[in-house]
Image (cartoon, rainbow, N blue to C red):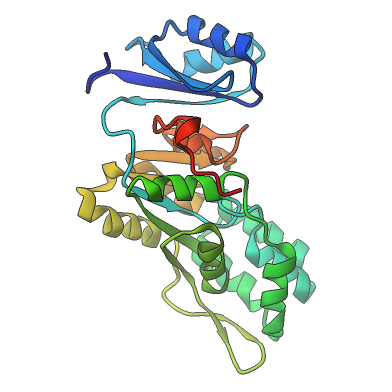
Length: 294
């Protein structure tokens, strides 16, 4: 029987394979095993000496592809879901797609990549990229959303399941409110925060409203929304870029989602091979608990 000091190892295979899952459960000497999804996901009490380095070594030795979380047992089901948007809830970077309409995608994408890796400052990088959007007709924003933006697998299910279990849901994005409002509505998030693109009556001005929502602002939103629940330990934060690092490391469960190396190294755990439903498995939800929303 698990108690507050036990650590729980949750394993989620990339592909369903009952034999491989049983092999892993045995290799890690887990106790009180719970099957979360037949042949796909399971968890159990792990030896106190088990480390991420050992887990990685076993996965490599067995040639298995899986995501995992090693964490304390107590308080795993979180009361706040706070997520980045671009390349996390959706598969695109909105500013890169807008830049394609303006004819500057390659140039903007290169800056985005460096900013997400933490190689350059986020605020300055955002200003430089937005400046290249000056004169972009406003109707291209809706075209971009309709034609380019796709919700990542499992995002709707993650949101719906946590809401059904009483959690608050928040998007905090270094992108733009034009998109975060629509993504929040599409997926089902209750709140969204992002940057505001300034415009005249017909086109973008090439400027963004100050102050810019970046790394520290994301942390502040985490602290603000988690306060009613007793603090950041009660939150799960998911993101992929350097501007997500502060909220990921400060949350009770910080997940790097197909993230940049620095983010993956600092996060509590990572999703590198599966989809956003894995964030539910990491909290101890079974597949039968999921509220599927596509």
